[in-house]
Image 1: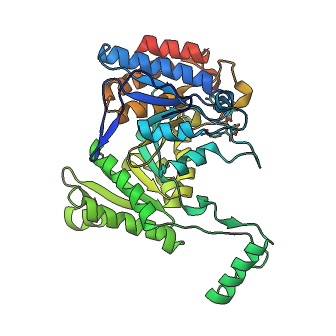
Image 2: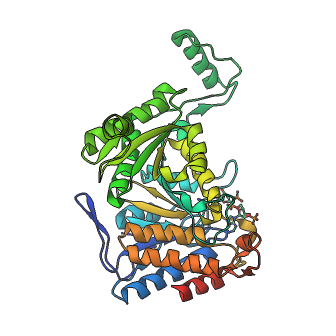
Image 3: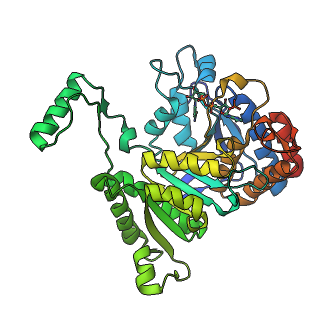
Length: 413
Ligand code: NAP
């Protein structure tokens, strides 16, 4: 089936009906990544394996299967092959994968490998949990109050890549059309982009977010949008979100308007409140009233901004995990880049990838092992054994290498 991938001894994760079937020894694909990737991946793999081993006493075990992209792919498949077919076949076939960062050359060369994977594998949801881990330095007084999961639509909006450079024939054509046929008044010397937001894209992300809130018993789902200005794209995103909640999850959800009309502001037991906030207000809200938000659903661009702003509030991108998901296929990843100047130095913070591994364990339903990793990371940070990036922000901390940090976490699990 594969050209160069070696499938390890383990069982496949399968999809049955609406559910994942997870064996005790699932095959999980990994891409170690470029730059600092190998350092943070080996630390992460050791911690995840140790947690699963200690938690289940050997009854469960991940069978890791290496697949490659970026620099490693060129070593294995030959020069110029940065995204092998094997990799694009293996991820959907084995359903769950995790990756380190990949280099995106600026201008020319090849396109972003991350974008290629998202598009080819239809990973329409970018999921970012943001919560504070005790001990991590934060710029706010109560970082523990923020505990949200952001569901960002990953395929549409101004990120769809439909745009024309100022002065080109295509730009002139579009401007002429919009001005003469649609009665608008776009300046002739404009660059132009198109912002598509569809019912399909919106309902896919909304469904995924609401299902997540139901599975975890969370109190609210909030649509973040700029619909007061962009009525037919962002405004429609909000409307379709409420529509989907009522159509598909009417028994489990309640729009915020009804909360006040019928229930005096107190949601009945087991009902998830569906609300919406204008994007600019959302930024204030996560700072001022963070504990009123649990799941935030956004179009692509808003999601990009709010994810990083929220992550900064709990200690920065070095600690922020993420995943790109389709209906079932999930690719967990570190949210930072390859930090090339630190390649091979055994120096950087592997927490982002480790916490993406925690998301992965949760996705497998191995919650106890996931909790044990969080606990191990938290204890290690509270003991002030941290990598250089946190050490410079913490008084009296001991600076440790990536691999030493992993060893400390394992001791603490
Ligand atoms: P970056 O690799 O994220 O690094 C920027 C800076 O962030 C680093 O110099 C370092 O700051 C800090 N940093 C990043 N990861 C860290 C870690 N694990 N521990 C501690 N500090 C960390 O961003 P970039 O330099 O803009 O991008 C480099 C390459 O990565 C580019 O090719 C870019 O396209 C790619 N990239 C890939 C992904 C992905 O695969 N998902 C995402 C973003 C970027 P200090 O030096 O100040 O300590």
